Length: 162
Image 1 (tube, helix red, strand yellow):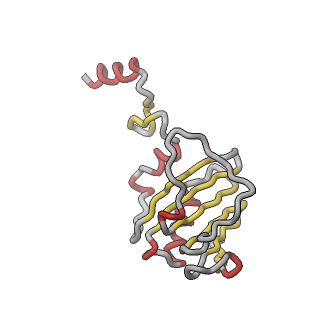
Image 2: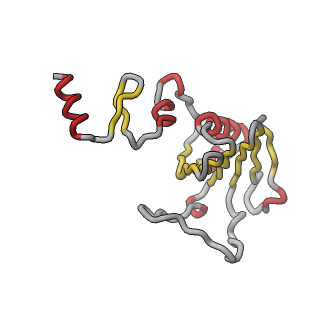
Image 3: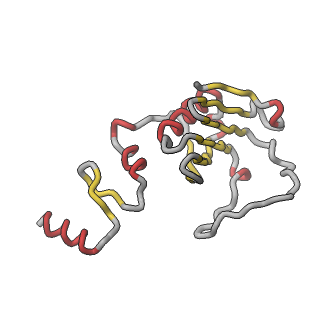
């Protein structure tokens, strides 16, 4: 019966493939399938959500995350950024933008191509929220963050991870 079920799935072309002893959707990046394994489970004591993960080129990946503002501290950011860096190893460069308020997020536009904005005035509320940005450039990993709200980027604290 299992063989018949398997044959039906394959003949229907449901976009699945056999990976590491189980079916995985062809739409799922193998990196994601690997991260679902129990030995790669990393528990967090705070809530966060990945809202965007885009590989722009073979060398550049951009990730955006939303973090509970109550969890916004240097230790939690180190843990989160280290985790994201270790699970996004397919590019040399990685940038992670960390948001703590929904007002910082772009409204959803399902099935729409990305848009670019140029020659727009700076957002007057840009520094009204806690925020951070992480960079991995080669073997160097570091991030900058706002130690409190209403602090512009010149007062951000810089932290080196490695």
